[in-house]
Image (cartoon, rainbow, N blue to C red; front, side):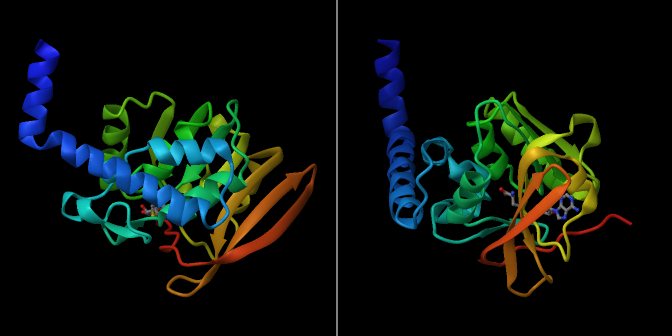
Length: 229
Ligand code: SAH
């Protein structure tokens, strides 16, 4: 009975129609933007299908949350395009036992997508306001395996290294050496490399013993990797 009353109240308050519209927008996003472009990793698709992207964008952009583009999240930063988030997730081969470092927490969306799949996510944000609100959002959503730190991600997170994978979500002129050091043998890093405000190259970095193999994946445009001074 209580459930019925609650259900009816939600319908009258417009909660249910809104939620179901987000669910169908998200299904369409996965089908048309992500699967259609070749993403096939089951865990990645399942995670992207289940994370409510609209809870990671500013309220005034709610209606654009599932659009095929990055969106502003304040402080001159952006939440990446859904396809790019899926691509970067798939390319690191995330496994249920993986420990992943992300540089550039931003809204926390990429961290949530990873947290659905892997064991532990460590994510670093240089802008304290963004890092703190992402940490609060991830906590509210119940993610217990995401650790957020406010600092310059150039130096990685040594105490928790080595990582199975590293995802960098801001464009750097070069690959920060501390991040290579903190990658496990056999680990994979994905990072946009290039000058700010220009087209950059998404690179895959694979560590095998003391050998580093880099592969250019595709042209991308990310916000600049900043440095604390
Ligand atoms: N992954 C984010 C996308 C954020 S955009 C998401 O899913 O929403 C990139 C983020 O990287 C910005 O928030 C920016 O402040 C942050 N950033 C830039 N340089 C950084 C650095 N050196 N260390 C940590 N974070 C950095």
